[in-house]
Image (cartoon, rainbow over all chains, first blue to last red; front, top):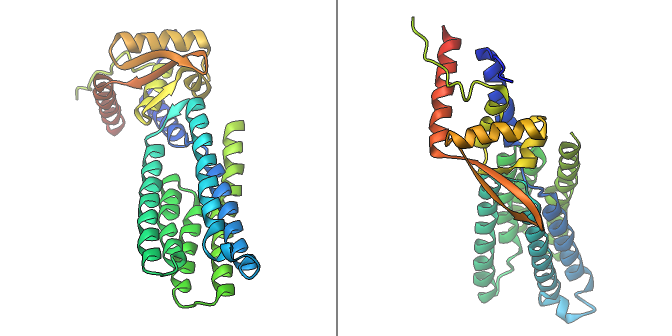
Length: 195
Length: 95
């Protein structure tokens, strides 16, 4: 049945549907929670077990967290893309942002370790960028604040070498920048699915 | 003052809703459009066929996890028609 639409009704339909399309993001909370927990665990293990197990001082927890997180993320991402019912250009942009972050982080890691410099402060500073941008793209304030926190923690870490302070700053940034926004995002995603 | 004629194909609530959603995404599955528009399966299927016949959207049929899947995306022709429709609507609202 053909329906007559007034120009106002047409505009309302257009705005409503475009608004819905813009909110059709992939579920990202899983990645923030996964990496938040893994990286916080790696930092705490490095700090707490460094005196007991020398391998902890040489980046073993980071290697385990990085490889483990990478495998879990890849499996989850492949499964998610098979189930995805909509391809949103914003998802693609968020993907490019995180992809370029990973490349920059690997290069930074290589450069700093080669010169015997602790990569932690630089990587924390760098983490602020994709977190902040993702928050802005998704218009999700907790991630925007998370990005700002990573920047604040990252720059502060450049002014101290004390292991306890560095651990507290990194874990604090992970908790407030990844884990809590991840929990809030998961709630929002579940709410949107139920709506 | 003469008003620009409105494209009759787009001047329908469900077809306009489908087009409005598709212009903002890369592609969407039939079932997702069903969920977002709240239309019945039969009605949505008919309107998608009309948009496809007019060349406004491209419909790809495939299998996803062993189930048949229909994905829709806006064509360049459809995007141009949508832009003309939006401009016409705006001119109506201005006058």
